[in-house]
Image (cartoon, rainbow, N blue to C red):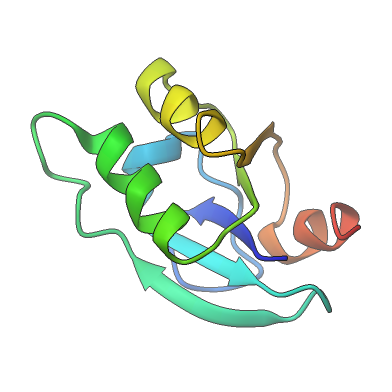
Length: 102
């Protein structure tokens, strides 16, 4: 299991971003709840297809859950169509990720 948390900086103590697909970073947490990877979002400044492009990036990394403050409809649809759970949540990235470890 991998959990991706949308944030505005690359620190595990960062607040969860309200922007979903346009978050500046995604912090990837493993099944043990530890931070395993930090991704800078290459699609934030794109004019179109941000949601589907970010969803495909996360799907290709085998992410099973995405946590963000808000999900746009295209982002959410692309994730759900690939069986990725979308969780709208606020708080500190590392703490919230640990809450959702199965």
